[in-house]
Length: 370
Image (cartoon, rainbow, N blue to C red; front, side):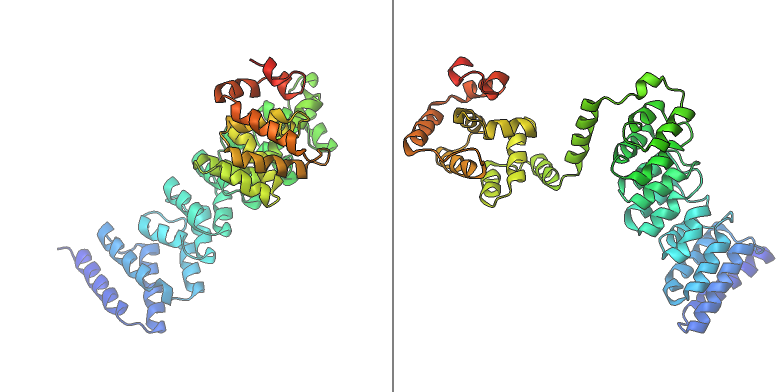
């Protein structure tokens, strides 16, 4: 064995012995000693020896002052040859310690960074968003947090790769989240179709910015009002809590007729309408036409399509009449006739009728749809 190898073994044995002493003074001395070994590397420690020192550091780190750990992390952030496990350990420490590692250490890989994004604080996410040359996969993980500060930090980081799908998503959000707008438009090589879409809702100053900085046919910048209103509706639907709940229940196979009735009885009209629309596979505006049509046969047909029980249908029409200001309560005979009509409906014929726009709009009667 070489003299250098023998000396290294003696040094390691001394460190192991020191690790048994739990006094704060000894822990501080040990941490600084190992730190100096790793930073200076004048002893040419082997990979196995460095890993042993890393294990000692990780075991005692909670007993060492913040300032010492932060000083150590700052000094190894740009060093080569530091054990990967130690860097990952420090990257997941409190933000005062992890900050230089997350921002500057080139030895952390994509998986390490994404794990920190998923499990650590917003401050950790901000540090990664400011990191040079992060990949599109890491940028997606940051966008998926939905945190405005993190997304803005990412957009302002012009060395970060951000996939077009994430840019389109943030651009769509920028109609309601104004602070996204300028950082988006300042992104190098922003696709022109994104700038065109944003032109519809940004301020006059940013409209001028788009006109000056993007080579776009002026005719493409004209705002189509109908398209703008549809965009607003789609954005509103995405962020609507009732819509989100209904979508979640539907995906889980838990959106039922029972849920509709419970929502209606509790006065949760939004949930009732959105849930009914989802079960019937129509838009919110279409379900409102159906539910509040002057021709009550329309709602009977819709209820037959979703296979509502006869007794439940009877309750539903009473509740719907009570929430629709323009609908007068049905007379007993009218209600009995409607229930009889509902009972005789064939599901296949009802399914054909409910997609007939003329029937929904009240232009034709049910018997004319088949």
